[in-house]
Image 1: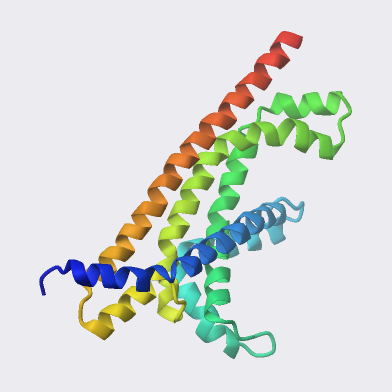
Image 2 (image 1 turned 135 degrees about the vertical axis):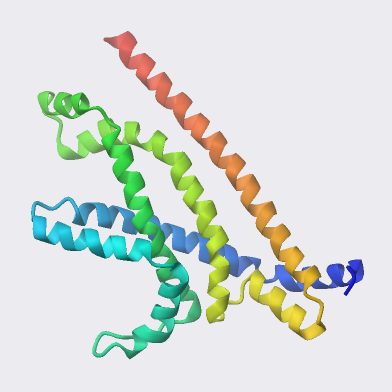
Length: 232
């Protein structure tokens, strides 16, 4: 079938109704991923090596399997697990699956940021008798945060692009509505083009914003370092 601007205009308000669901799933999954990333890092930092080994391979298993398989497992298979299985709505199943999946990558981002802090900073905080809270809040995190911003931002954009996988279990986002419109009218090119354009219009400005945020944080961090050097 030929391209029809009339169909495009007619499909746009129908498809865009799902934008709240798509964005809502993106941000809730991302918040879960950010929180769970800290949990992975904490669990693997315990002094119990056998426990750390088990946690490491659980995380590797989650990271190495496709997110769509994990979405299917939580929605279709998890309710069938004896004793502990429970049913999830499509939205919750997708949120947990995507959030936990991306948390395994974000844990590595946290680790790389923390490891980028020079060992002398840790030793200096001990010499100054800083508490653990002050060491993390005043020494470690201000230095570990800037290098992680671009990576965390990239994972947010990647997660946003993975959200359409949730349509496979019935989450009514923009992709699901685009397919529905196409099935009802036998015109797929216009609604799916709208879906692609919406993802482009939302993801590209996000990438630009992340770069500006990275530059802003780096400038602040450089100013703090300059003040510290002048004081010394």
